[in-house]
Every structure is written in structure tokens, then in C-alpha cells.
Length: 496
Ligand SMILES: Nc1ncnc2c1ncn2[C@@H]1O[C@H](COP(=O)(O)OP(=O)(O)OP(=O)(O)O)[C@@H](O)[C@H]1O
Ligand SMILES: [Mg+2]
Image (cartoon, rainbow, N blue to C red):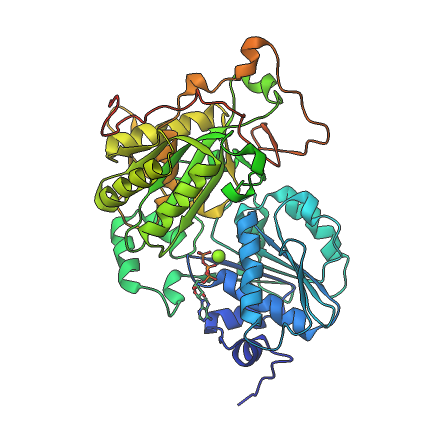
């Protein structure tokens, strides 16, 4: 029997120093010496966790190296570093270490550094990286990969470790890299495919239920970790990715203190069942300083300034959070689902908004097929007319792509979301928020009076593939309330 030492083997390191052994399939990946290692996997198999362990192993066993961890989205980047810190704090590893730079940088006492950043060219270009680690790589654009690669390749002994849910067309770098290591593994390229069934923690009965209730494509992708085409999906992958931009989400507590409630947004809430999360999504009108006028005229772009979802949170805690959000953003309407488990929390949410003197706000809505049809149909229309920007968030994007449709005789399509099987909480809360939009009100108000807001000097912007320009520090148009109304299909109000 071979004995492994934590100083040279990631498996022994995880076992002895982190106190959480890797599972067999994770070990095979962590121990491979290929220069490019690539995993495509279903949900919840421990992709992010394994990347955190590999980062810690490399950082603590080699002195003075730089590890760059790239995630799709800011939240994910912070979470991954927090995971590293939590794992390392079980041992002596953090003794003498420094966590810095807005919690994106962990420097160990041996001088090695783990820098965890969201994917964007300005974050990635130019670092002399010894180990590049990428999570949810399928959501990261080719341009970013092209920008990161030269610095890696030129560095002797450098390595690249990549994991993702299967995502990306056959032209996408991640898919190509993965295929290369699958088709002809060698000392340079090695790839793996993990299914959600692999995890010892998997709820196998639930996975079987998903197999029975969802389409074969959905199951192959989300559970088996296989690349699939768009057939049967209500939103195509390219349709979604063309609307994605690397802007920063704005948490309620990040709003400048002086700006309290100047930013109006429609809120949508979805209440979770056992396997779902409670989710809140805000949709608002983007302040683009007229930068998209060439594309859209006086119509304004819609975007998601903020969304969040919480697993295993009591309704009361989540309600508290929504109320807090309503104290920072101005929410003329929060569409909250009353069917299923939603009746009680919706009533309570209404009471809490009234208590906090936030009026008018909570609109109880019944989610039926017509409502989904109309809400998701509107999202599709907005995507097609290039009026919607989405954040680069794998969860949101996967959930949207997970919506399926049925082709009706006569050619139209009907959205069909199997009720309450698989995660759709974020997509549903987004749909609820969108149903409270009034598009004819989403125009530049100043334009009427001819005094547009000037473009600030030093404004940093990013672009979507479909050509929209978005400030990185994205904010809604101030005091713009004409784009919101009582949602269609609500219990009271105008109805259909
Ligand atoms: N070797 C391990 N031992 C114990 N728990 C583990 C191990 N690997 C992963 N886990 C746990 O499994 C769960 C899923 O892990 P993780 O979030 O890393 O998976 P993921 O594949 O990145 O999931 P997602 O598809 O949501 O991105 C977490 O609760 C994590 O702590
Ligand atoms: Mg993950």
C-alpha cells in the first residue's frame, strides 16, 4: 500500500489537514498531472469544493506562487474564497495568513497567494499566474480565455484546472478544451465527466424523479453532466448569453446612503419548497446615460440590479430580508406567489411591508400556465428586442435554459415547467418581477424635457454580445417610477 504525504498529495492533504477527504472521482481529478485538467459535471457533485481544495493544496505546498481563481460572477468568486478560508481554518494553515482586498485575496505565510476574481478582462489580464483555476467555465467568454492564456502558457510549469456545468456551443473554449482531454488524453490534456449520482450525498430518489419528469436533454445536462443542444428549451443558450454583461449587482446594503429609495424596481418573490430556495429578483430600468440611444432610441434598457436566493432559510428571515431590500430600493410592487406554500408568507410579507410603512407594495399573484406564458414570453420578447441585460450568473442562466416548451398545433409554443421539480426558484421570481413591468413607461423621462443626464467622466462600461452598453457600476434611472404597475394575473387589481 502506498502511503501518501499531505506535503505531496492533494488527497492526503484534504484528509489530514482539511479534515474532509475527497471522494474517489474528485481524487482522480486532483491527482492528475496533466497541464490542462477539465471537468464537465452535473449539479452538486463538488466542483467548487474540489477547486477550493486544489487551490489550498497548491498554495500551501509551494512557496511564493500565485493562484488565480476565476468564477462566473462576483458572488461566486467571493463564495469560493470564503470556502477556501473556511476549509483552511480547520487547521494551522491560516496561521500568519492575510485576507485582503475586499476578501478576494488570501496570502499564506509561505508567500503564496490565492486571488479569487469574477471573470472579466480587466481582472484577469496580465497576472503572472502559476495555477489558473476556473469555476463554471462554460459561462466565461472566449475573449477572456484568450486574454488569460498567454500569461499562463509563457510560464514554465504553470497549470490550468477547469470545472463547469456543461454549457457553451461547440465553438466555446471550455467545450473544446474538455473534448480534447476526453478524446485524446495525454500529459497535457485530461478530462472527466461527473454525474450528480456520483456524489455520496446525492438524493438518488430525487434524481430518479427528475429523470421521469424532465426532458432527456435537461436530465443529461443538469444531472449527467453532458453537453446538449437547445432542442426543447424555451430560451436558447446563445439567446441568453448574448444578453449577458459583467456588470456588478447592487445589494441593498451597497446602495449609497444618500440614495435611499431613489431607485425604483419591481420585485418578484418565489417561496421555496423542500428542495427549492426562497428567491427575490428585482427588475429595473437602467441608467445608461443615453449610450444605447443609437440602438434603442428613447426606449430604456431593463436589467436585474439585484437578486438573491437562500436555501434553508425560514420564511420569517427571508421576509425580513425582502423588507430590508424595500427600505433601500423603492419597490412600487413586489409580486409574490400565493399558490402552493406561498399564501402564508405572502400575507406575512404584506403585513411586514405595511408595518414598515412601505406602500404600496405586495401584490399576491397566482402562478398558472397563463401567467408563466405571459411573463416568460415577455422576457423572450425583451431579449429579442435587445432591451434586457442579464448578469453573468450560472444559476440564473441555467434555470432559464431549463424551462421547456411544447410545440402546439399551429406553430406557437407553450412553456411547460413541470411543477416543483428541479430548481426554478430564481427563474420564477424573475418572471414575477417582469410581470409587473410597463414597457411604455420604460422610456427616458428626461428626454421629454430635453435634458438628458450627462455621461459621467470616467464611467466604466461593459458590453453585451448584442451590443448594449452597460455601466459596470449599474444603477437604475433615479426616481423613475413609470415602468411599474400591478402585475397581470394578480389576485386583485386589473387581472387579465
Ligand atoms: N469531498 C467532500 N466531502 C464532503 N462534502 C463534500 C465533498 N465535496 C463536496 N461536498 C459537499 O457537496 C455539496 C456540493 O458541493 P459544491 O458546491 O462544491 O458542488 P458543485 O458541483 O460546485 O455544485 P453546483 O452545481 O451547485 O455548483 C456541498 O455541500 C459540499 O460541501
Ligand atoms: Mg459550484
